[in-house]
Image 1 (tube, rainbow, N blue to C red):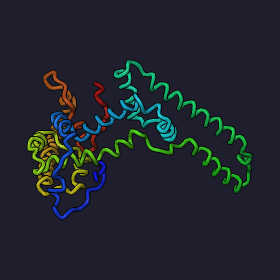
Image 2 (image 1 turned 60 degrees about the vertical axis):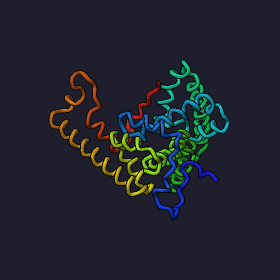
Image 3 (image 1 turned 180 degrees about the vertical axis):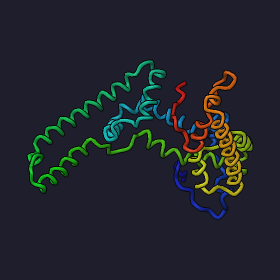
Image 4 (image 1 turned 45 degrees about the vertical axis):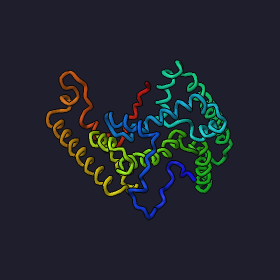
Length: 272
């Protein structure tokens, strides 16, 4: 029976090295590409997965009845994913009609709820009562009425992202194991910018073999030490010298340090 992505790995007597001996080959080429670029490779893989989700959402998901119910419960997408949707639809489809139509419908739903809320609040005869007990009961009723506008479910894109994180993290760990037979992945990781703190912790929580744990930890220590030195130097000479050197734009040291600690903080996806 095939284990679904993200499901916990059962402890076996064979040990951690063999538990992670089979990487997901579908992700290996994407992982290689991510390791060649700046920043945390797992953040990049997850960002690309988010963009893929949003493109499928534009083509199919936003018109599905079950998806519309989910969007009504979450009041649409979260701010980062909604912002990405606005940016990629004109590139992919030449206009923003899909996003505009969806949010026009959501605004109509919100307006209807506000009309109902106003009607029900007007029917609350206790709102101006001088009696403390009545005011207390009226406050509870007011809170209950306003809760109609609260989000009942999470952003569908965020939920997809949450489910994909264990899948990507485990595939990365498996690719680093010697038994995977992918020495180029190990070499590329050692030459990369390393993982952000969030995904470094996620890798360690999977309890990889001692060899992979030592490999990752050693590289992460080097990355953090290098970033700390660059940040100290930038603070000493002033941030303006760090932004542009020799007419060539560079990412400021403080931005690189922030990304290394917090992960993909900007979430500015490449729409190409």
